[in-house]
Image 1: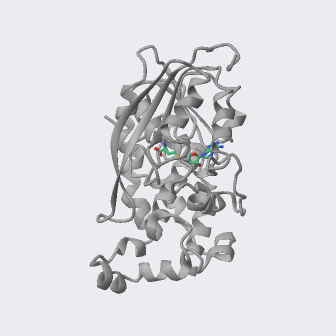
Image 2 (image 1 turned 120 degrees about the vertical axis):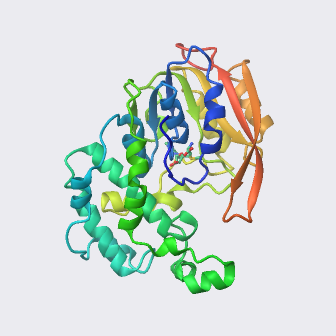
Image 3 (image 1 turned 90 degrees about the vertical axis):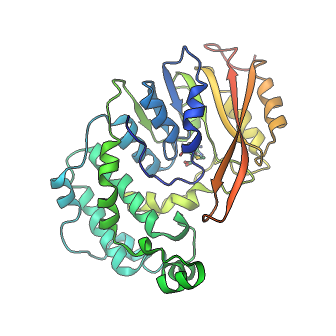
Length: 342
Ligand SMILES: C[S@@+](CC[C@H](N)C(=O)[O-])C[C@H]1O[C@@H](n2cnc3c(N)ncnc32)[C@H](O)[C@@H]1O
């Protein structure tokens, strides 16, 4: 069985992906993971032989999906690795904008070299796999694994002596090179590439642009949760900047704002005629509440089922674990194939 590699995605569903897929009805053949993030659910669905479509508004998440879900057989070999790390680091976009912001200057120069070299790989899927591995490397070097930490804090947490004094952990992996991290994870990522004999697809759009263009038996939603740590642009936008060589702008329709969240869900549910079953992951600390979400869903379908599971997730370190109840709303679309909300 092919194993989901170490992605490290905030709010991922890795621990419960199997439980989620267990609930897909027996007539399911196609699954659309509409907010695919680190692809934990899409990957599980792929291993189960479904035809899987993914979408995420962030470029880096599209590349994870292109590398691990759509891709059936392209891996990175020794020659590719030589290309990626060949040459002398130089001052480019990353150095100009992010030296002493997220990484040290010499590290940014390496990022500029690596980014330029990835472009020399001979196919798009190799580039996606390289971006996914670079993401892993950049995240491992970044305290708290997200790019919204200020530089003074980054330097402090990357100081191994200080870290040992304070936490009895050196966190030496923050100071390993990009190349070391890349090579440490290479086999695992290559091995996660497999062919499930289906025409899987990866999209990189605002979900609202896709709902009329795609149809599937199951559409699975794991949006950001309003009221929790949910700013995915601030966590991972830097990776999109690395990929595009531009300062990208935060996206709208981000499911973050408590004031507008119900309207956003309503807008989403009103556009789902192409999907036989809707699956929504949710939890007990998000807004709207379970009852609020149920009332909203009931305006679209009387056939709503809620299954629950306790989910333990790590906040920052071993000491700091929280328990949430995870909900899975399962909706049979009464208007499948017709216009929704009659
Ligand atoms: C909770 S995460 C998904 C995690 C994923 N299920 C996993 O296990 O890794 C939510 C994702 O929704 C994406 N997102 C937010 N608003 C979006 C939109 N309007 N269209 C598409 N994707 C969006 C974010 O970029 C983020 O990756």
